Image (tube, rainbow, N blue to C red):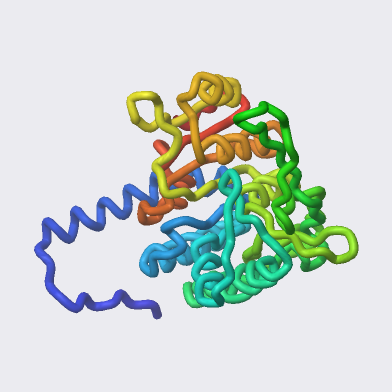
Length: 315
């Protein structure tokens, strides 16, 4: 017979009741969203400060396990820029950036793959397993998940206004996603954790931006949601206030008028591409907030900026 655990301390009756009522209210609020997302796929881009903080990392792992437990199919795609930088520094390998992308030569791409597919990937897998889930780590090379091609970027010279092609080395972009392995795992209790490494012609290894991979994977799976964890609260207006929800058309307007600028532009563009294909909605949210994934998924107000093809009724 199941019994209740005896409390180790004796809280006041009012405080104890209020705390328990709050937990009950939270679960009650979450129920319709649990039902709505049951059987659906949610792709989570995991990176930034949330991945570097041990407490937040543990919370994230537990949140992903909970999602799986209530019938959602979470797929995690992770970054690792700071960790790659640290390893390159330790090995005294210099690297440079163009438009926020790391120039990746032959020596660097080997280190990138080692860090992303090795230490970082396995740390996330271990955390999820320790939290009670069953995670498996893969890269885009496994099962030819991510077929990639060399990323081509052009830039105009400020002096002559002549456009030139930039060579970023072994930096790639997804050419196609073979979702077979992920669809197979979806039928099990396994949570896939993906390192953003792609394979090109002749087995060439490419380093790919994790945001881009997450968007491509979400589209290939027809995900219900793409969650992009960042180090900001979401998209903000010109007053610096969070915009809870915007349509794709409105987002494009905000890019044109400069409201959305800098590093937020490629994140929003990834979301726009995803919702223009087969993803119901994409959300940019602050991974530094404890349980941000659960707040976004299981509460009415969410926790970031939701981007959809058209206005939804959630917020």
